[in-house]
Image (cartoon, rainbow, N blue to C red; front, side, top):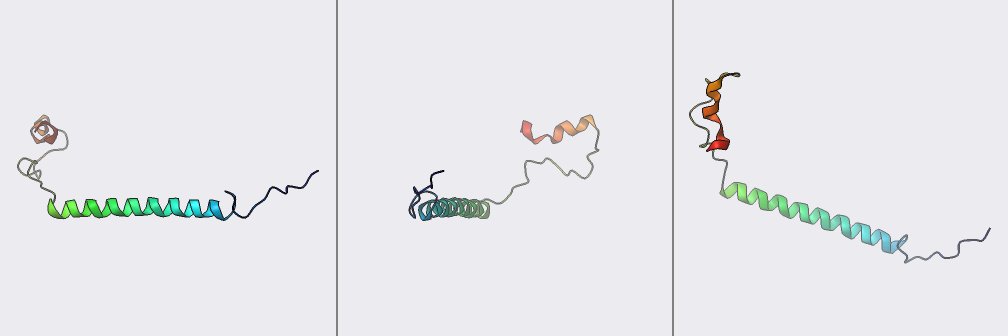
Length: 75
């Protein structure tokens, strides 16, 4: 058997590969953090508006044909 002498410190299996993986993970983290901040900014300026829900849902029965009038997808 021949020895594997094709090793190097700066190959993709060495420091270079570790740096590529670290940069990739940090860029993914930065992307997700920036999107989370953007979503929070939008939710601060435009809070949830429950007005599409017609009337109060306190009297809605679990199984009833009258529940169709509370369907917000048809608004």
